[in-house]
Amino acid sequence: MSLSAPFLDRVSPDSAASLWIGGREPTDARTPRSYALGGMRIAFLNWARPWDGAARGGGVNGYAAALALELRERGHELTWLCAGSEYAPSPDDPSRPGEPYLARHPDWLGVRVLEVVNSPVLAPSMAQFEDPLSEVEAPALEALCRRVFGAIRPDVLHVQTLEGWSLGCLDVARELGSRVVFSLHNYHTICPQVYLTQGHRVPCHDNRRGHACAGCIPTTPKRTELRRRLPVPKAATVGPGVLKRLATSETTADAARCVPSPSGEGGEAIPMAVPVSDFAALARATPRVPDDPRGETPRLLAEREPCETTPPGDPALMPITNEIISEPEHEGLEANAYGRRREAMLRTLNACDAVLAVSEYVRARYASLGVASPPMRVMGIGTRMTRIAAWQRELLFDPPAFVEGLSWREQRPVRAVFMGYNNWQKGLPMLCDALEMLSPEELAQIDLSVYAFEGRVIEWRFRRLEPRLARLHFHDVYKPHDVPWMCGGKDFGLVPSVWWDNGPQTVMEFLACGLPVVGAELGGIPDLVRHGENGLLFRGNDREDLARTLREIVRTPTVLNELRRGGRPPKSIEGHAAEIEDLYGLLVEGEPAAAADPRATGERYA
Image (cartoon, rainbow, N blue to C red; front, side):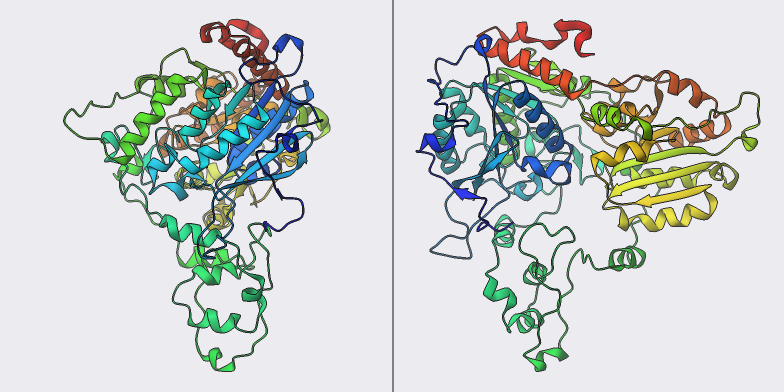
């Protein structure tokens, strides 16, 4: 989106009146409005915008947007703060971003939306990877936060993710009287690339005071990434010199700006082809555009450059469990910048008023690193899918039951569905590996549906399986309201994550639609999937164990009848908003953190 868009206004944080909702002037931050007297002033910290949902910002963004709307409905004043993705050039040097400033979007469904343009901390996290200490201290950003928080006076600042922000921003909020709540939706606070895996493949049990982080993943230099995010002047993109500039460019950085993204997001899209004025340039090739979105191009590239085959015995193929392995002290080893970043993050978490681990594994992992309880406690999130499923109940029809006593070869095929992102961590490549381990006779009993964002690059592997499967349906884009029809008539959902997935929302979405879940026994999945009751668990990142589980389902499909009867809906976003509201209220009223533990409320939020 261009910064010149009329609905994004630059505002002066000194003008507090321009930031109030409904014209109500906030009370002094050091004497917060009583929770018992009505609504609280709540601010969410995130990097993506709320209306982008999970398409930009992942499941965290979709969840936070749903929670913000529920709290708004309950009478609270919501401000959404985002940063780290929008940049504008300096008036003195168009090749560099200017100083951070605040921009205001029109209120979104009653939620105030403020965006920091030119944050010195880039988002998402991997764009910031080479500069870890800016996530600890960013003076220009913190000075801006002081003015913004001074204007909106939040009773509670709830950090959904720190990407795009610095720890100093939380210090400012505390100084101004806000209670700070931090949700551990991912591992960003202890892993600057989020996944806690070396090279995005091998589990990381020891960061060696930050030295294991150095060189962990390939990254784009921060300066290059910043320049890429700056808008391209219209004259440069539509003028007659465009083709010549592309033809003589030595890199693809400039060329990529002239290619519209498939979704039309991320800047002003222009036609792929431009008028030719320099015919001499036609003899020279234009640079190859990375991630070219045109037509069949992604599939052809995947076919010509297939995924690398991981040899047997490679550490990336080793099974993973939820066992917590304590990290050595490494006495005498001085922490590098990544190590100092982690130490600062852990100190800040312990200084928060509440830290919400979204699963028991997350709590145990952070406790092993020194985060105390309190302020940390387990609070699983809620899902809006319970409401969507109730609205579209007619789409969630049960499949025909499997017949007791009938041979598995005579039963109808089992109907499995995968939905989510196609990346290594979500396990779609591992699912392919496991399916290849089944016999043609067993595959002929599997009706598989795959709905995978960015799935086109792996589609060829499933097409190779297609002749052996009972049926294959492959699609790479969907919206939350599509999930009921995607799940209708299916037997089970697949969640084959190969990392410690904090609290995968696809599990909750399957359960909300009445499907048992076949999932990895990793991260937060076992919190929701009870083996033999509402699903089946297999050992994480273990292709043979997943293949064994699928083989058992195919050969004894009547187990699916029992698993379907054993399911119950997960926590709704409405029930979750109520427990979050209770937590906020206790903190604002000055109750000790231990008294605000939502587990004390019992079945209400189970």
